[in-house]
Image 1 (tube, rainbow, N blue to C red):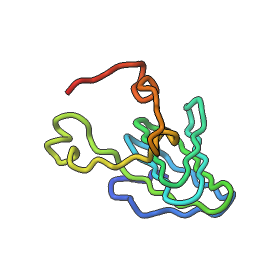
Image 2: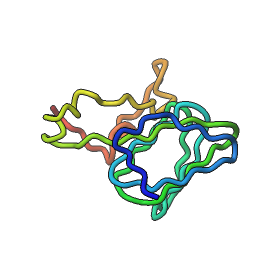
Image 3: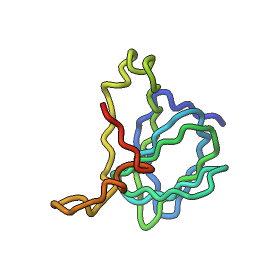
Image 4: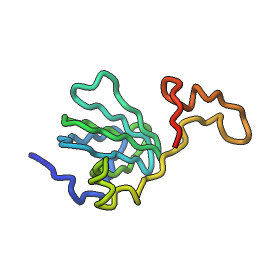
Length: 126
């Protein structure tokens, strides 16, 4: 059964140990709003663990299995907006979703190496 993600932003709820299988088509964002979700996508080398407040963007096609771990979990699956100038013209550039911080030690005035913040040590100037 194919599921369209065109307008789906309704939160899904899984009880502990409950699984849900979805066929992903195109770019989607999986955002966990509560609990802990174990995400496995066919063809991916690693499993993904998503805690509350975290999200995962997937740009391909594949069969995804989501499981609630250590209690119930709630998540949403929504389509990614198009990148590039066509996406910008359609309004995609105005609604960028905030991400949860990746470095927990970077708060409270702690020093963080810039090489940890930038992939492969690249600096982009705007």
